Length: 343
Image (cartoon, rainbow, N blue to C red):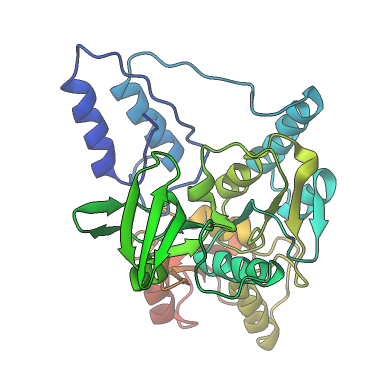
């Protein structure tokens, strides 16, 4: 099995299965540094501490693998160690890391292994690639699609992140073949339109656990909510680091939230310090709690839009949003306090 840390409930299911099957040899794999959970699992431990704590409780014996066997050569293995250190042990910004170790592309390329953070970007990239391939029909035989919303139809389940190939189209009925099991399932066209996306661009959750021999182009790396674990998971799908490209955006890596803070401080005549809040500061607030009301600070998506209650409350309202002057507040408490109260 593969470790699934999406909720405490899932952890309980794994625990129950192991406890109820003492006669079975159960082998599980997982990496707590991949795809940080957007939901808070514990108000005592960090996500990684809590996940590792649960692993120790559920599994008596653990083996820690230190080398990435996916990579084809020793140079890339050494490069991975360097990049991993920079991502998780330093405050080096993503752009600097990409400049140093990877390639850029300013165009959407005809590539089958695009990776993005959001479904919205996946759809936009896939649409462009279909245009480049001169595909005009909504669906064609031989094309792959990925289930993005759970669906149960005629007693058959279509699970999220599973890939299917379109093997036949008869009017409004489409026959999908599960790429992993070869099982063929019939479904109506509007359901494919609603629950699936074209498989030219994947979310990281769709690609997690996969190895890629060909080219990879990575999008959305510049979003403020793109956590370190996501970036690490995205580029470690590749067997060859020379085949990884990052999409180059015109704007810098400041989030709209940070830009709004800068605008507020400029209007109020507050000095913009070098130690100003940035994406890393915001991401480190995720899964912590509002310093005022205790609400969990989260990032979520609704209809392909980012929904977050994370905000920075200034301790001293006479000073700008520098890191040493900011604490994590939920948006509601931040609005309630406004500029009226210094902490």
